[in-house]
Amino acid sequence: MIQFKNVTKIYPDGTKALSDISFNVGSGEFVFLVGASGAGKTTAVKLITKEIEPTQGGVSVNGRDITKLKKREIPHHRRGLGVVFQDFRLLPDKTIYENVAFAMEIVEARDRDIRRQVPGILAMVGLGSKADCFPDQLSGGEQQRASLARAIVNNPSVLLADEPTGNLDMETAMDIMKVINMINHRGTTVIMATHAGEIVNAMKKRVITFKKGVIISDREKGGYYNED
Amino acid sequence: MRIRTFRKLCRDAIQNISRNRVMSLASIIAVMSALFILGAILVLAFNLNHIAGGIESKIEITAFLDPSVDNPKAEAIVEELKRLDGVYEIEYISKEEGLAEWKRDLGDKGDLLDGYMGQANPLPDKLILNIENPEYVEDIIMKLDAMPRVDKVNYSKEVVDTIGRVANIIRTAGLIMVILLVILAMIIINNTIRMTVYSRRREINIMKYIGATDSYIRWPFILEGLILGLVAALFAGGLVFGGYILLLNKSGTMFGGSSLLNLFRLLPVEAVMYDIGLVFLLVGTGVGVIASALSVRKHLRV
Ligand SMILES: Nc1ncnc2c1ncn2[C@@H]1O[C@H](COP(=O)(O)OP(=O)(O)OP(=O)(O)O)[C@@H](O)[C@H]1O
Ligand SMILES: [Mg+2]
Image (cartoon, rainbow over all chains, first blue to last red; front, side, top):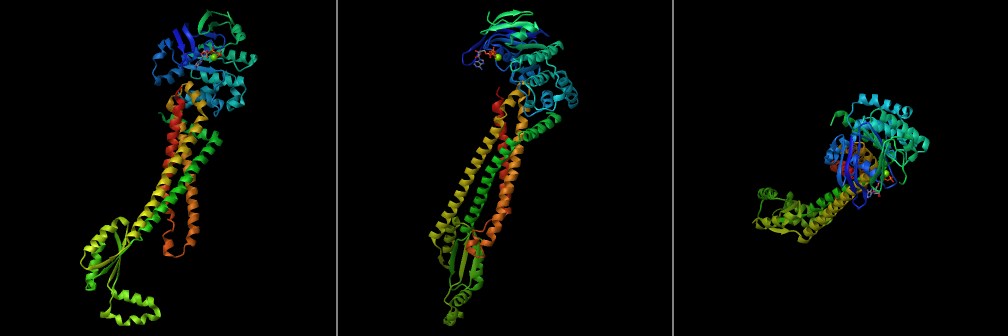
């Protein structure tokens, strides 16, 4: 499904964010990427979304080496990924309904399908009654639910989440984790970068631990390791 | 692009304008002000050009015919001169008319001229040639001098040169003002649009990360630039023409029938309206669209 093969990323300013990283994530898996601040988690996520290019090595998604994608193929590649961030990134001038519908509009879905699917997805993440609100009228947890709804409305094979609970209190964070878990149970592969140890320990999923750009452990049903 | 996609892009553009009301209004006002100032300068420049033309048309050459020339021959000469380049009107004053005019000017003492009536009339026939433009003067003078039946030619080289110079200065000043203002308007419009796009750069970024193609992101902005530019151009046009009509009404009562002041009579609104309207539409929408496209492109590079 997702494969990192001897990936090294050196930023233009010389910072070595990842050095010679390799790992595989199978279809339908749920994987946490953990590690201290600056360990390289976000860098790994950005390599998958093709926001940045690896300095060395290869990244493939669904068996396709994405470092070889042409520039005009990037939008299509991103549509196969659902992405959520710590800061939600909803379009501020669109309602929650419109934000989710927008993700379908860009893939030129039919109006009929949009009208049918969007309310269903919003209900699924628990936002059925907030469809006509604007993002700034919602709490952080609700905004993250909306962002999750947008991420999965086109049925991506992978959900990438970079610190999705970073701005939320523990209780709200656990609610969001339930939604993400539900998404994973529908068959979507989930890759989530976080340093929320409590959440990682509670979920009992595969955990890949980064430290200063290298993988120091990769365990099934692992826990969160601060500094080994 | 599918039709339903295009409809969505238009809807997005209109929605963006109405949901960013303050920003949209500010942009419209900024673009409108720029166009308004440009329009005012254009009106001024058109009128200056008109005045320059008016001044030039004041150039006259006076020619006196040989006394032996009789009336039919004089008329043949007038016809010949009319065919010269740059001559737009010839006033023919026969010696009889000249004498009558002189007599009228003397008033009470007109009787003094009674002895010169008829055969004794000492005056030559006179032709006043109105010349379109100082450029033609030299040629016409040369041709007149070469004509055997033309006796004497009067014109002031200095006056002709001065008129030409003044007209050119007026025209050049108008042109320079227009060019400067067009550039200024373009800069203002470009900056305004860039600011509205800049304020939404985050949105552009988000759209990219959920997989929107560059053109899908770009179109609503381009349509927005078009709509904002169009609305601003319409309002600016309304202001400029409304203001100009008011000015015309005021100035119409100011200059009576005086012919010198007639020179400075303003052009009618129809004479300036279409050109200025066209400039507004081109500058407003053209710069709006181009500025939108360029500034979105800058933020798309992620
Ligand atoms: N655009 C960039 N240019 C230069 N260096 C960068 C850039 N982005 C990240 N880095 C550096 O790369 C390293 C890894 O950063 P990364 O954002 O991947 O860490 P992270 O594990 O996501 O940290 P956090 O938990 O704080 O989000 C850090 O040292 C960081 O300073
Ligand atoms: Mg990070």
